[in-house]
Length: 210
Image (cartoon, rainbow, N blue to C red; front, side):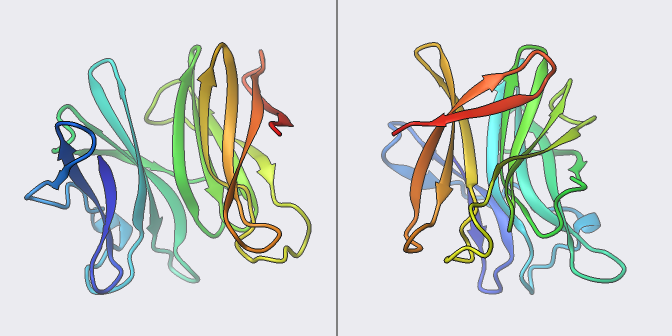
């Protein structure tokens, strides 16, 4: 299990815990298993973004996608998704980063699905909702396809109310996408929608499951 470790300065890093029964977990003794390189401006002495790890396995290789931020010459840090590879989930190699032009604040909660011949990266475009991108491989060449699940109303009653933390899954032959919401009373709850894969490489969100 990959999880976000945080020190007393809110510097975040990817950590690992292991289990034999999926109930009792033990932290890996040499955590963290991944801290972003110097390119990211990561600093153990201050708030540094490296969180929301998502991991999948393809052709014997594990791929980890994690939200990081990149320093800019002026203004706030730029949001990015870091991509790593591993054969043992302990030793991780940096494969690069993904910047989405439509995302200006944070690109949290990456979730990747391999469908057909394409790879789909879903992520939270903070302040706006869930966006996505597509590529022909799990590492690079990502093309932004824009917003998929947008916030309801403007301004929302709760500042954190955007469709976030999306996950895509299949069940009994059908595909669905879930997201977290925080309306009407700022309590967090889950919504699930039907999802359709289109022939042109895009996806369409259908009716919400009631």
